[in-house]
Length: 436
Image (cartoon, rainbow, N blue to C red):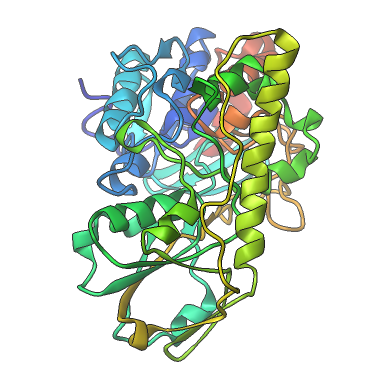
């Protein structure tokens, strides 16, 4: 069933107790709990429910974490493959089914262009269909707004096709020839594998992303980590503190039932590996001499996860099959520092070095010196402003289907307490100010 009122209203109501910006899993989870508490609100979505999943993922995309970790509020994954990994279209269907269950007061196709403080003390919310006031604003837009392409990309010859990971769909999309993928986070290595399996000759610029086991000692590594309490670790107890929010995710894949990604083994199969991108001069790409170090450091994280699981098994007295000791399948003979694109036959580059959040539309003192939002478990120091759905907002699962429900419940509890007895009413003074 449709989750969108049709047609969209010509204008917004003058005032809402809560405006939720973003109609993805975070915004819908917030709406679920707001409805449970009887708190009037509106959810404003710039495009449509599930847009980023349906329109910003490649054709073979699937979850990296098992389906059992999909735990939207009162709507856990209930399909036949809890240990499997949903494909792109299945993820969209799961989110749409959740939206149909929630039946949020959702308006799709509405962009929020500015949030500021009104003279009344409420928030002034400017949108593509008008303006309203709100006592509380929940920012649930995620942090993947602006695809990052390095400035040196402008120096590439016009003959090189450039595609960011957000626009990559499949190998046939790229012109004939070899491909350079820049970035070895989750997207970069999965796109590299997608191209490699299609028979394309691939070059990969390897960054500092860590890697993880997939199955270890008879069980999915995520199952061990769940049992060990890793997913309950809060950012205030994390050894890195707030810096954990800026670390690159471990790479592995859910493709074909899920498996590890060992870049050394791909090198044995013909994928050419380089270090971190340094510069581009004409048709020559320069790399830092850090390939060996990046591979070693990724492997050390991989081995440390194995050691943590080993220690847990020993402490708990669990019987589990032994694993062979880790060994390096391939070692680079030096760190290549240059790649002549024409000489190598490279005709396209896929940029997979991430995104930047875009909060320029929030005209409030809610950010630190690097432009990152400041908050404690999503509660901003700006009274009435909240953030949701970001990595390590509270736990590892905060930016995923696993932990967004707990975070949304917490924020709605805060909002309910702040609204007090007037939570179901209208801020008459604010509404009069709009009418005036």
